[in-house]
Image (cartoon, rainbow over all chains, first blue to last red; front, side, top):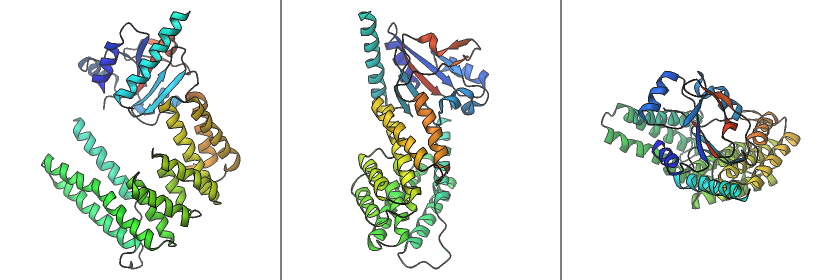
Length: 108
Length: 257
């Protein structure tokens, strides 16, 4: 998944898009190293020492990893998928919303 | 490392699948009867699992793995034959449930649904089948759940069918980006809370399960404004989800394992 995430972040640089993770690894020091070695450039909330049982995923009712939500520029939940929906679908969701955001910004 | 973990995962899943398999009854099984097929299936599964664990060569292991994965479809044919030959046997409902979890679409799936609706609409086994169908994206699975929810008079079956329809709708709402589907899921869950609250389900009272799902869909369903997240990044720097308002956000719950 990382290669696709990396390409999304690179391709949409300068556009109204951001990838935010909720990292659910228990060991914070280890994940710091993994983030460096995997060249993960995007920011993540840390779900805490309880890992997948942490407070953020519990609040959101996340039971499968990965789970992704796609929010529009107004902060509304527009898509959700437990497990990757597939790269093409994910791109379609995000690009559609980015276009919507750009049109909205141009209209203001 | 990742490869190894996947294999462990695969073993765990299989172990769970086998644990879910009913122990054959003590009564000596009739030749070709449900228990006999079940026994044969369990034995073949266990033998292959033992072979898999003992095998060191990854290529040979992959081959055994394929054989294990092929067991469900192979036995689905036998279970379907049993249900066809014994339409009124209560165990036919269980057999058909196994067909439905293995076939997931195609002619066997269609026939199993048809037999199930025609002969076992009141069977308590159908509640389990409804749970299986909740995770099947075939539109026929949805049609079957709707039929079951309408025709069955068994509250456990009816309530579970509605829960499963709601779950499917909610998943589909996320994939399709459909507020309408999310609203339908909410209506369906409210019906469970109002009409089937005290019915016992596999994971607890249906009313409690539906209430929890309802709360989640109303807060985190498609169309809702995402609740704030205030937390720390990996380096311990505090930030908020709303810091990114004005941008499309892909919020990815992930882990490096």
